[in-house]
Length: 150
Ligand SMILES: [Zn+2]
Image (tube, rainbow, N blue to C red; front, top):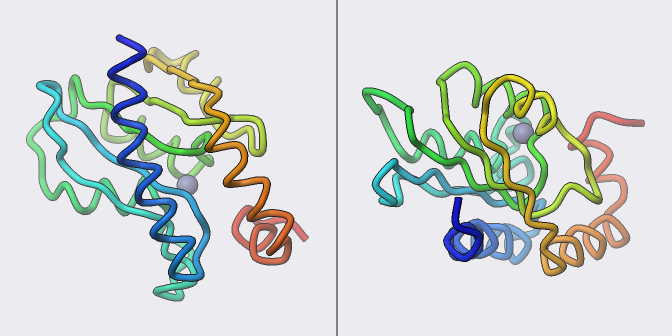
């Protein structure tokens, strides 16, 4: 896909991540875009805010989009490489494309998605990397809780 477009869409996910950080949450945001470029839903990790470990950025954006007849041609944009749970969501519903802000601070399932026919665009966005690095340094226990590591 067009990289400029991917970066414009990433800005929506970054806004969500920053809003999550301001709420005391984990700064991971996401947005689901339709095949025609319409913003279908956006959301952020809400583990802290809702006390819900299953409320990831991608699932929040997916749920905000409501029922869709088909996910063909849709794009999940996320600030961070998607975890296995969210990678599973992408495959379960047949989301066609994933735009990843960065995969440096966490390497999730994006290679696996690419191997299974999902178009994956990793933007290596320095702003996304800095956001996660600062968060992990400030709140290591919260980060490890989120990724399920001791
Ligand atoms: Zn996830």
